[in-house]
Image 1 (cartoon, rainbow, N blue to C red):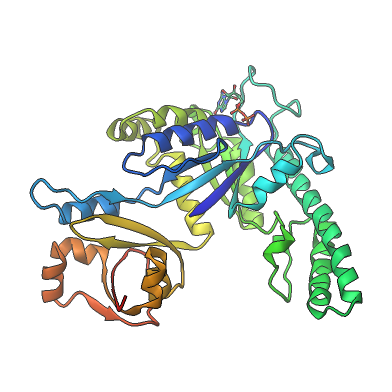
Image 2: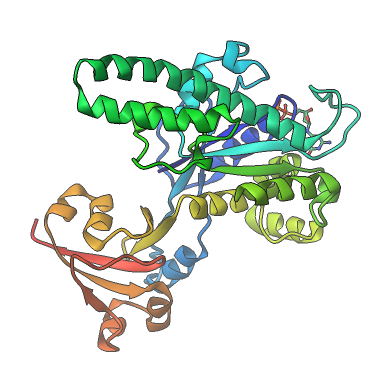
Length: 364
Ligand code: GDP
């Protein structure tokens, strides 16, 4: 699944948000929980399509269970000014952050005299730049070490090492200008082994008090401007409110949000933006047994998507029956959908679309 790392200066609301995430995850029923580390929380990806389909396939008392996809949030502690010089948790921090797909950068946009700000005053742009500088410095240090190794190998005649060394040098010159690696354009694809942090997409999470959830305050406006220049997304949340929402039944939570002037919880928004940022889409398998969502990358073809369900299904893929989820709701079941001619037969080159329901025909 998708993993999002939560970073930010101390006292900006990361733990408050993370606690809301773990509580929300604990409440999300019908999920076979695996034991995961204390710094990892899982939330289900909100998807109203699944509930609609579960109704379609309900037979009397038998309601097919909904199995949603989930996103993992990783609490990445230890990022403080000087982390790249070994302050804070240093290495553990690097190990954690290298594993995630995207970064949620929590920024303090609330004022509260009782909550100390590490830099003495609330200044979101200054905070953002402090963290971004640490991330850039961490990448610089890591990549310089790698470059030295690559150069050694290149001298020994290793052609691949020479190409990688050239790429590393290009990236280092971008980092050296104080820019994240993602700001540059390079000839080759950056290998995963480079372990870079600043290639990962960032979502800025503007943490506000409940009074500012409706209209943006000045701090949020500043964050939005900054993010727009980087081409990054912003999600405005109130970490404290998220904590309260995580404790409420769904309908109560919805009412509470409406009173605050918002339609969707900050966590739900964050999950959705995470999906968009990473180019992920959902396809669905659906019947009387269960209604289940699966995550794939935009552009994936039917056999790869089938492989998400089971690797045998990718190898033994013959063709797939595909229908848009709305059509299935309208038809009220597979049989009727087929008789209306709404179920298409798609082959190996079919590019999956968000909201497709797929039934794989295979020879396994
Ligand atoms: P962390 O160090 O980034 O993990 O920050 P915490 O989550 O521990 O939050 C630091 C303090 O700020 C705690 O006392 C929180 O209760 C408080 N806090 C977090 N979010 C908000 C908020 O939206 N409004 C206000 N007033 N306080 C908040």
